Amino acid sequence: MQKRHLAAAALLATTVSFAVPSFAQDSASTADDTVVATVDGAPITQSELQTTLDQFKGQFGQMPEEQLRAVALSSLIDMKVITDAAEKEGLDKTEAFKTRMDQMRQEELYNTFFDEKINAQITPEMLKARYDEEIANAPKQEEVHARHILVDTEDEAKEIIKELDNGADFAELAKEHSTGPSAENGGDLGYFSKGQMVPEFEEVAFSLEPGEYTETPVQTQFGYHVIEVEDMREKAPIPFEQVEPQLRQLVASEKYNEVVSKLKTEDKIVIEDKDLQQAYEAVNKMQ
Image (cartoon, rainbow, N blue to C red; front, side, top):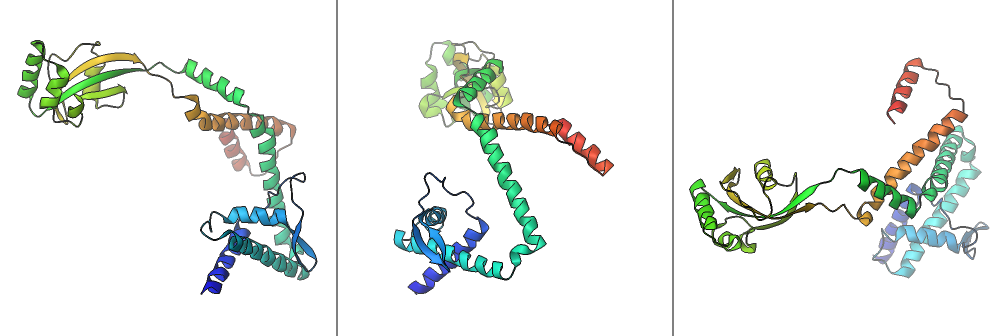
């Protein structure tokens, strides 16, 4: 049973290694060239084994380390013997193979260019400056800190307003009468900005000054509300750390368009199909 398990794992590992080839090897300065095995004289190095091992840890994380190394080595040996056989049969000389290799070469060059000429040029200082610019240009948003008392009927809400007019404590009335989930917290809803509450509730809440409560009940789909506003303030911007990934994508996209536009002016581009050319130009105008 154990042999069958390892054989199945090795087969799956080989499948994964073909689906996700290990093009990204360690740099020459850090690669470990210690030979761990040879296949018909061709070496398999420790750095190759480690790269494959790292790829497989996600699929076989529960497997003991030594067995996982064996599975990784098995997949490398399988790949070596199959590629050796393919070369002996001249499969690397076919037009289909050459076309695929050219496509892969272009993809790798594209990715390398993107990493070195775009991603590597984006510094933390650049992202922070862009964040500050976006915050400065963004429209200011207000948020209110409010409490409410939710009841089923308009008459109940009117009675609560009378008690408030006579000096009753809003939080205590909320604990006693409100049917909403915030009742036990004295009706406290915390701070919220526009768009977070139903329109009828929001409109009234943002019309009140801090310390004021509604003089008439506010009807929504949930029932009748009595609302009190405790505070109003400018909404704090989202912290830089939370939006840094999105900012990086935005800056990378802009830099990409800038670089590609410049490169397109340096190369002669001819599109034979006139309809396709018009569609191409329309698409590029939108970028």
